[in-house]
Amino acid sequence: MFKQALSQEESLTKELDLLEQHGLRRTLRTVETGAEPEIVVEGKKLLLLSTNNYLGLATHPRVKAKAIEAVQHFGTGSGGSRLITGNLRLHEELEQTIAAWKGTEAARLFSCGYLANVGTISALAGKGDLVLSDELNHASIIDGCRLSKASTMVYRHVDMDDLRHKLRDTRGQYRRTLIVTDGVFSMDGNIAPLPELVSLAEQYGAWLMVDDAHGTGVLGDTGAGSVEHFGLSGRVHLSVGTLSKACGAEGGYVAGSQTVIEYLLNRARSFIFQTALSPGVVAASLEAIHIIRTEPALRHQLLSNARYLREGLQAYGFRLIEGETPIIAVLIGEAKTAVRFSHRLEEAGVYAPAIRPPTVPEGMSRIRCTVMATHTTAQLDFALAQFKQVGQELGVIS
Image (cartoon, rainbow, N blue to C red):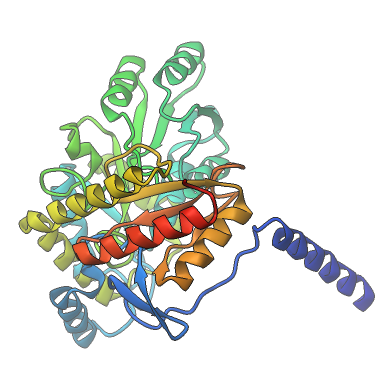
C-alpha cells in the first residue's frame, strides 16, 4: 500500500516536472506590504502593475478605519452561516446598498465572487435548461455551468451572430435559457457588447446574467459597472460581482429581482453552506461603495492612467488586445517567453506576472497589466521604459 502511494506521488512529480519544462508551473510569491502602487515582494521594492485593487481602496484610510470599527464592535468573524447565527445587520445594509447601486430590487451576499457565480448558475439552471456562455468567461462561470447539470453551449467570444444562431436553433427546446457573460473580460480587458446581448435575450425570452467583477467600481456614471455604462439598468436579469477588486475588500454578490434573490437564499448551496462574511470586510465594502459613488474623480483618474499606459505601450509597438479598461493585455506569445519577460521586468523593478495556459489559450501568453488610480505619471513612465527595454532585449518589439 505504501509503495502504491509512493508511485502515485512520483506520477504527480513527473506532471509537475512537465509543467516546469513548458513554462507552466505555478509558484507562490510572498508579498510583504499592502496593495499600493509600490510593494515589497520577498524583500525587494517593486512597482506593482498587476493588482485588481484598481482604485487603491484596499489601503484607503477611511476604508481601513471602518473595518477596524466593525471589528471592535462585532469581533473578527461572523460566527456562522447567514441562515443560522451569522446574519448581521451589516450584511443586510450592504445588500440593500448594492441593490440600490445596481438598480435592482434586492441583492444577496456570498463569501466571494467565485461562490456567487457557482451558486447562482447551479441554482437557477438544471436538467431541461440551457446555458449559453461566452468562450472567455471566468472559470467560476464555467464551473457553475458544469455543476448545474443544464445543457451548456459555448458561443464564440463576443460573437453575437454565433449566439443568435444558437438561440434560434434551440428555441422552444428548453424550459429556461440563461445567457451568461463577463461584463469586462478579466484576461483581455474588453467590455462585453451588452446592448446586443440584452436585445437578443429579450428577443428570444432568455435571461441574461452579467458577471461584472472587473466593471464594478470602474465603469458607469456612479461606478455601478458595465450595465450602467451602457444605460441598461433594469434590463439585465442578474448582475453578479465581487467586492474584492475595485472595492478593495472581500465577498461576492448577486443583484436581481426579489423573487430570484429569495430563491437563491433557499437553493444556492454556496450561500446556504458558507460562513458569512466577517464584519470588517463588510464594513469596508460599505465605505468603499460610498467613496466610489461620491468621488467620481477617482474613477476618472483610473481610466486616464489606463489610457496613458495603453497608448505608451502601443507607441513602442507592443501588441495589445483592444480595450478601454484598466486591464491591459500585452501579448507575448509562447509561455516560456512570457515567463522570461516577466522575470526580466521584475529584475528591472516592475512586478507584472506572466499569464499562461490554461488561463489563456496556447500561443496567447501575456503580461496582464492592471493600472491603479493611485499610480503617478512618473511611475507609469518608469514602467513604460522597462517594458521597452525588455521588449527589445527579447525581440518582442523592434
